[in-house]
Length: 351
Ligand code: SF4
Image (spheres, rainbow, N blue to C red):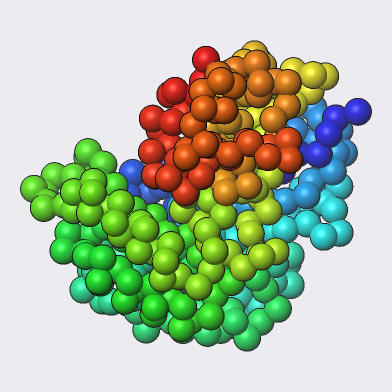
């Protein structure tokens, strides 16, 4: 009997490429959606045959810009998932979106087709920063889609970026107060990272220092009304993203679409998976436990201290560093201080 798997579907198209973006996406607002759908549906069928009609608790359409998808394309993909898997009654179906690609009618069609959680790439609440980042939308367009979504029967999240050149603790706190006034129950706050081979990577930018970034990170924690439940994610209790939480907890998931990776679990063996045919290789339990530790320790609730996890960590290090690590109720997690130095903490913690 194969256990439930979550599903991630990658939609690698965007209206245009943002200046900081190193994600697997290309600027193509009108791709051949029917060719794309055919490939995605083939992959879904493949996994349906391989895994059987297993239960699916979450489906996440990420990108790229999945909201560019015509709703009949989305409907077709969801029907194929329903045909091949057993989507649970309370399944979370998330659609990532960008302002300017949705209106009331289109969002309501997505909802009718099954979407019950919308994530919007707002990024900033001032037009100057949006322009600097190379975003195609302005603040008004972003506010508009948030307003529309808040009036609909859908859970809502928004993504924001901090740490732009010129950002200070004060300006980031103001951004957080503006976010608070929107009344979101979930938001993600990402530090701007400058990747080589992006337009921003080719500019000689005067970025905030690491210490300044850490101060901004703490200021966000103190100013946002929503509590943090993962390094970059904040939510009201019960409004956490279930898809991501399942994955951070170490649940298996299928990655569908070019560039999408998954972790499949069959007969006590974990497999690293990429698309349907590109890559499917067993990973040993030490490797998998390390992955679970790395992702799970990013969450405030941490992970279960299973035998598999105990095997890979230096428990003495954990017990002697209470300022960084908490062990309680059979779980291990990073403290607030530990979270700030998570990379070093993990290096010391893994045997
Ligand atoms: S919308 Fe997102 S995925 Fe698309 S180009 Fe911008 S940052 Fe990249």
